[in-house]
Length: 85
Image (cartoon, rainbow, N blue to C red; front, top):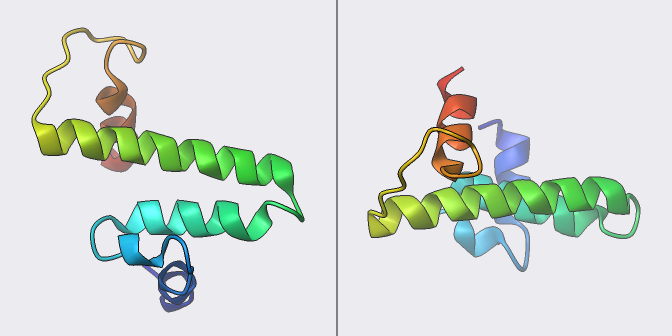
């Protein structure tokens, strides 16, 4: 992660503490927080990305097995495909 992005994510008063656990959670949370008043639409998109990463992290940490091959059945498919690029 670029130094400026890292510092931005770590510097968030509400999401910076997540950086050591999951960098994307801190980055998406800090971005949504920073743009909520200046660009609410962008903030909603970033909050959605935060939710996707959070769901993937929870599924991974608890070892939950999800059957199916469609995105609606298995949120981890979408996330794992995005990071495989």
